[in-house]
Image (cartoon, rainbow over all chains, first blue to last red; front, side, top):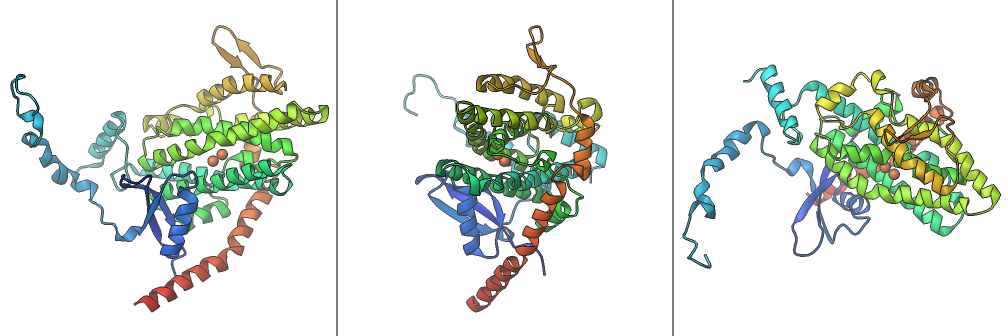
Length: 94
Length: 312
Ligand SMILES: [Fe+2]
Ligand SMILES: [Fe+2]
């Protein structure tokens, strides 16, 4: 038997209107314990109004070795940004 | 496939450009090992550090002091957890880290091998021990390894109340009776030098410093941090009206720093080697906590498995 409880990732919404944001991780035997521990460890100072806990094994992460293939093509697509289209100063509200 | 020299050069270029290193990215094996050793040692220190303070929870002089001390110690448990989690991103398991503490292969800060004899010690620990830790931790918010830096940001936010509650304890004692002030002085006498030792050996005797600075794991040397600590702490002692137990301590107008006496390095190494006043007691307490918690860990696992089976 693995001596370690499963690892969980903790996400906190700091206030309504904002995304949940990754805060850290912890070990817990099940989801309920993960939730209770997340509350005790990560929200002792009013850091959040909502918590998500996700068992780490369910997260598929991109491989850092493939970052080039994944993200570099975006570099030469400057036409996706508004500054690619220069307009005369006289044109307003655009 | 790139060769190691190329990968190392790329890695160093990233570090030099202040780009954080994240888990699973390529890193030199020695960088990984150094981080695991340093982060786990730091985590163990947070956990063992609860023991000298826990000693005083039931004897805190008022409810206000008691809730503050409880909250502080609970924070330290959290700090241990953030740091263990950061170490685990480097590919080591929690149980392995705990075993390294229990079998003595991993160290923790030697300061926690000193006993907390009086209530004034709780003040001195918050002020000096947390104060010294904060110096180090503020520097580490800029460390090159992302998860370690992020853990430090959280920790630093929580630490400042620790130091203030400690200082407030001493301030109250120093404004009290003669006996109370004497207690504060006695605590300073016993905690001052071990606090200076917290920054580790002198730079000249610290063979790993150069590499750690190059990798930006550390951003300041032991001696730099120690000097910074003395410079900010001595005026705080002056304000309390108690005396730093160092006859060589004096302000240097030209350097704008305090000069201070030589640390007893024999004592330092002796405590590191396990011969401090409480080394055995601390490890026995950790071992007992681990052993007594075994049935809880097993029961929780069994319960989770049973519930998962029912749910299917
Ligand atoms: Fe701490
Ligand atoms: Fe602390």
